Amino acid sequence: MIDDKTLQSILFLSRLDVSDEEKEHFRKQVGDILDYVAQLQDYETEGIDPDLGKAVTVDRLRADKARPGFTHDDVARFGAHFSDGFFVVPRIIEDFLENRDEE
Image 1 (cartoon, rainbow, N blue to C red):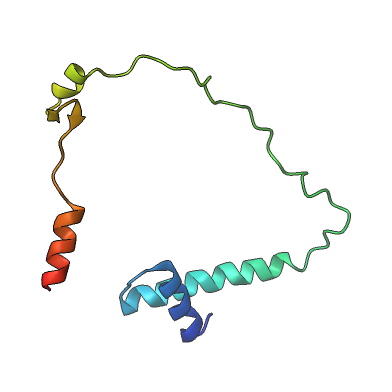
Image 2: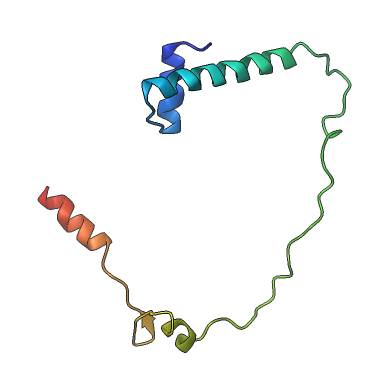
């Protein structure tokens, strides 16, 4: 089990807001994980290749080639608005800053 201070630190760093019941559940889970990690430290690993368990990965990325994309007409069919060749979107940042100053 982990103490309250450690639990609060983990919740703070994880930006989690949980109920008291969830805290107890979380405390037990973290405690079990830490116990398991502590057990792993008891095993002798001297001389074992750290890359032994590495999976062989295959490059699955596609070639980086330019391909035709959507045209303005294609995008406009989805409801986008244009002005002088640019997308027109609602003001967000400016409205946020104006409203923040009023609060």
